[in-house]
Figure 1: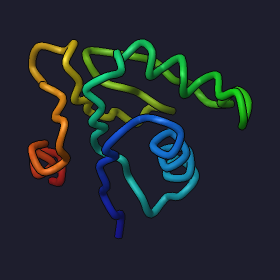
Figure 2: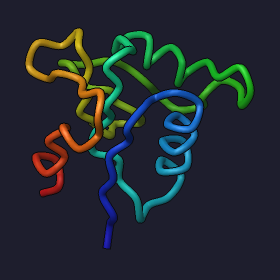
Figure 3: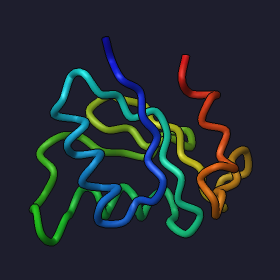
Length: 99
């Protein structure tokens, strides 16, 4: 059974959680909320980590989503029109991605 999770904040810890989830077949990241980080910068930060090195897989921004090794992850941030990044995790509509 796959556990679906959402990440609130894409700083150091959020990126580490995503890296760990990519390596674990039992965990699927379905959404990331960070109202302060642009999607293209998320791609850059995840791909080129100053501590853990370059991510070996494929990372891209596509249709307003973060795509990591073919896994499409919804992004909540203030630069995308259809999603609005929330300052508080309880205001994110996480349930939309747990199907």
